[in-house]
Length: 106
Image (tube, rainbow, N blue to C red; front, side, top):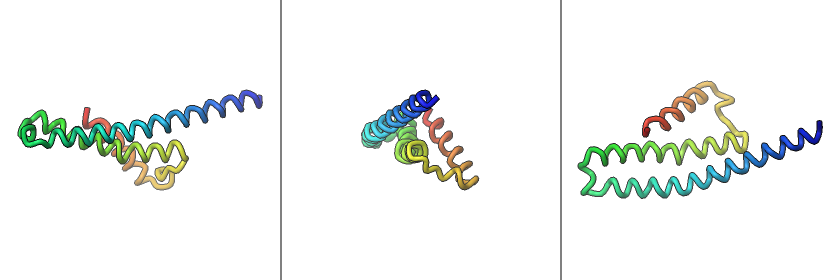
């Protein structure tokens, strides 16, 4: 039984490490790419186009996702520091905000 428990713990540790690494990479490259999107879509020649405005607001919601939601998820999943476990209002607000912010750009 102890070898099975040890194997499960090793797999859980490996998965947590991989998810944290990919989240940090996503945070860095996603933030850079979205900032470039904002710079492009706010150019005067594109500011008046309706599709450019749509893509700009989609970029803003994705920026919120990358700079707010991803770090909160990394802290809560990777380091077991979840504020939603202690307060029902924070839990409901966090859940609603995370799902709305992720689905609006789609």
